[in-house]
Image (cartoon, rainbow, N blue to C red; front, side, top):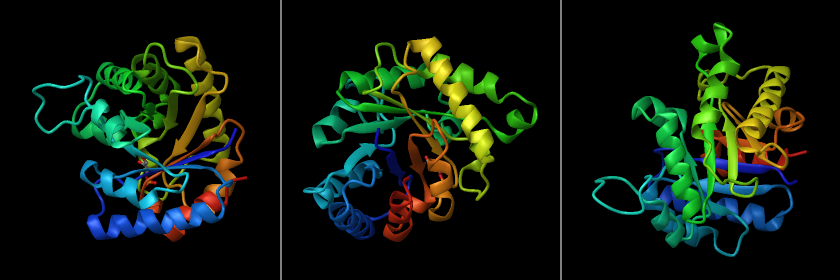
Length: 247
Ligand code: 13P
């Protein structure tokens, strides 16, 4: 299975900078298309331009969130149906920044993931413990509950991806050890199997301070099927440095 390297641009980029980033990346990926499956997730209003910038390359474009409903009176939200209509192929749901900033519960994340599947999008479902939870030895309890609560009904390894992102590793330059990452990924796979029968062939990404310098080691861990990258997805050099380092 090819690794999936997905860039979560978060709330970064304006028209010119995001166009340059997407088209610069498209050139790199077109020249070496076999390194990995590559996706970028820009802010909603940048998606259409990003799709144009990567057209003719194998790069997929995705959203960073979607609403659970197909349409309706939900000011400020974006439907999965619109993301699909624009040409997106995936959407991130349940990122820890949305769980923290918007109080999203696993129940809501599950509904969003189900809306994504209904619209024909791959749902990238995020889970991960805080530093306090890890220090208290609760990583598996917390991540297990998030998996049980957030995975959509009726998903398959083709339509669901899990991203394990320890909250304390996001944007901090700190990561768990390679052994710790491997252990949580093995746990995530077995729990996804128990919970939704999704273990075999499921792609489980690691996210949290993935950089060109640590990507080769992290991506070589058994059970790590790719990376969800924040800060280092914001320059062509760093993001390509990660893609190029795929084992
Ligand atoms: P960083 O790569 O900046 O740590 O962010 C990870 C992340 O949150 C991706 O969704």
